[in-house]
Each structure stands twice: as structure tokens, then as C-alpha cells.
Image: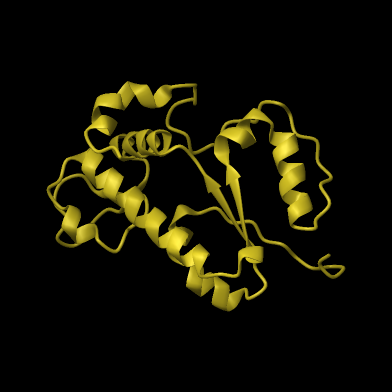
Length: 174
């Protein structure tokens, strides 16, 4: 159990998937929860985010041609210049995921948890109770069977939504 009055921070910015060693250094007792999602669904959301123009993180990235850079800036970003958007997104996701998984693997296993996004959406209350128990935390909230949408979505989620851009995803998958 955390000491009385201890604070637990939850932070889910995708950029922080590239900062695990830094976060580990400043929060040496941190437990990292990896919320993972089907790659096709993630790629579809990333393509939609780039196309929307609402997630531009580097509007004037030096030496970056075309559409302003969106979402997290991966170390290999220069190698992606001139590629089609599905390829940029796939490499962006793969690069960040590889770094994240390698950095999590370097931590003691008791400091890492994993939670499947689909399982979480299917049974939010059960998933959170299980996660909280694994963290030795009490769960004191009642969750609805259907969670509210994130304010950052471009379009409402629905089953199989990734299939709207299946041809683009298939061109870079796996």
C-alpha cells in the first residue's frame, strides 16, 4: 500500500512512450501501465488524426516537407520525409512502440502492467478493479458499461472503424 497521503499520477501522453528512462529516473517507484490496442485500430486513428490537422505538434519542423508533423516525433522522423502518409504513420507507431517495449522490458517486471484496450472497453469496471488490485490500490468508482468518448476523438469510435482505411493499412501492415 502507498503511504497515507501518497499521490499517484496517471499520465497517458503518447509522447511519454519515448521517455520511460527519464520518467523512471525522476519517479523511481513508478509503476508503468502499458495500455495497448490492436495495431490496425491505432494506425487508422493516427491516419485520421494526421488528415484532420487537429493534432499538429510541429507546425514548422525544419526540413519536413508537406503536411505539418502530427502526433509524437519519433527519432527516425527525418527518414520518413516524402513517404506516403500510411507509411509515415506505420513507422511512427512501430518506432514508438519498439522504444516503449524495449524500455519497459529493461524495468523490473513488478513495475510494469499491461492492459488490453479492447478488454478495457468491453468491461471497464472489471478491468479497472483488476488493474487497481495489481497495483495494491482500492478502486472506489463505479464505471458505466459504456465509457464517454474522449474529447480528442476526430470521429466517434465504432467496431471495425479501421476498415474504412483498410487499403491504406494493408499497404503497410504488418
